[in-house]
Image (cartoon, rainbow, N blue to C red; front, side, top):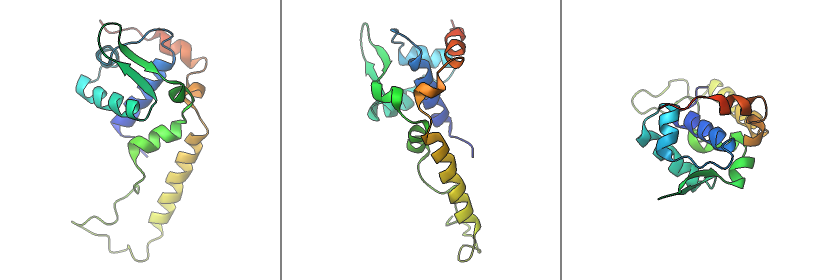
Length: 145
């Protein structure tokens, strides 16, 4: 399974904020540091804020901070939210419906594999994935000028 770019960015933003200490970087600073388009990251940040995982303050002294809910959120919940709960394959594609759909066992097997994937991530929190040695590595990533 390949994650959407927005899912990857969401996880990386949460990880960065989890080790930010007292700093509150702006969305623009995070986008620059991660070398991603600001507009794309702003959409991800807005969704994370809507989920209650981070807080965003505008103006002087503003920036992004991880909420307590964000700190303890399961990676599985974040991934599910961004990926959605649709099937891994589109068997009902109207342009070319699958001729095997009435008796195919692949769809069920892929659904079970997807649920196992999510279940394995449900047991991991954001705090877990930024524990040492990851925290030190995250803090050592140089800022892009």
